[in-house]
Image 1 (cartoon, rainbow, N blue to C red):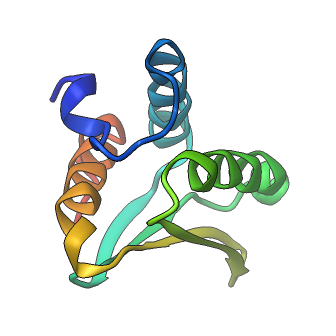
Image 2: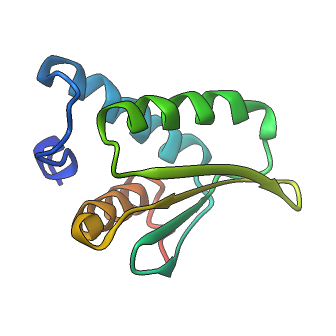
Length: 113
């Protein structure tokens, strides 16, 4: 998957900043991701493991992403000692969520379920 596949057309992030943002997501996926699940067609859940010390970093990345892609809704929680990132979109943006899930699974070593 190329960076252009991952970034939706409606993204307001300047083009020159996109590779850095993609690298931030990939770094989060590669270093922390334990499980990817799809509770529904417009929902994605990322289990980022038990190191909850990165919660602020995850929240910051989610806030940045919401700023350029307002169709995303991010919810960060700690449940049973696991840092969880829930991402939801409306039906129109489901393909973007599908691409994010695929990228997460690939970067996280194929943990998608």
